[in-house]
Amino acid sequence: MTIEREEYTSPVSASLNKRVSIRHFTGEAIPDEMLRAILNSARRTSTSSNMQAYSLVVVRNPETKKQLAVLAGNQKHIETSAVFIAICADIHRLEIAADMHGKTIAKNLENFLVSSVDAALLGQSVLAVAESFGLGGVMIGGMRNHPKEAAELLGFPKGVYIVFGMSLGFPDEAKRSPQKPRLPEELIIHYEQYDTSDPTEKLRQHDAELAEHYRSQGRGLDDAAWTGVIANRFSTIRRPEMRSVLEELGFNFD
Ligand SMILES: Cc1cc2nc3c(=O)[nH]c(=O)nc-3n(C[C@H](O)[C@H](O)[C@H](O)COP(=O)(O)O)c2cc1C
Image (tube, rainbow, N blue to C red; front, side):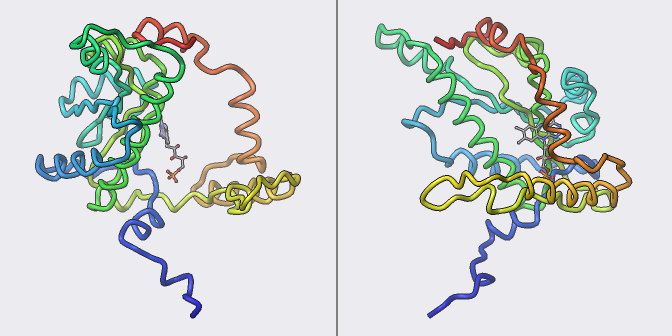
């Protein structure tokens, strides 16, 4: 029996299939119990070696959100969201656990990666569950513009850094953007072996599709809407001080 592709839908896939990042909110508060339900579902996410090397800091205080918005490069949606959540990699708790047994955590690139991956997976679950409840939000990588200041503002102990933030709230539907086209499926999903054939033509087509999307939004990016942005943004080192700042915050990269 062949099953039609349309039959493969579930509440999770339906919610993901219609999602976009939300940067405009109604101003309505998120009920405490709804937020706790979201965060506790997200905490069921897989975690490397059951380490749970992450923490979430929920911020509702308008003054703190204002300061966080400035740290992230004046991202207004941090202020206007109902809640800001700092998604943090956290090896501080592991150090305490080790200390309880007279040991210290051997820190290197691996536990930096493990805690960052753990935190990212948790963060994606928070957003996915929030979206399934009809909330919207956007992740805020801009929080890594000033990781030390963010750590001070939110009172992190050593061994905690903010991987990204998240603004959550009820979406202002009048300002919901249409979905941004993704790269073609065949450039992302490979079967059995990586397909190394030249993607240039498909990237050009994607440039055109994305440029059309931006034009429909009144945003006049040039025709190289994806490749041009990647080339410009990532041809210089971004956040060159990141390694030394993270070392100050208690991580190690050996
Ligand atoms: C780790 C991460 C960091 C992000 N940081 C920001 C940010 O600082 N500001 C922002 O407006 N959007 C941010 N975004 C949202 C992306 O720009 C957005 O997901 C992407 O453009 C695709 O759009 P979509 O989510 O609407 O499909 C971030 C997304 C991720 C996954």
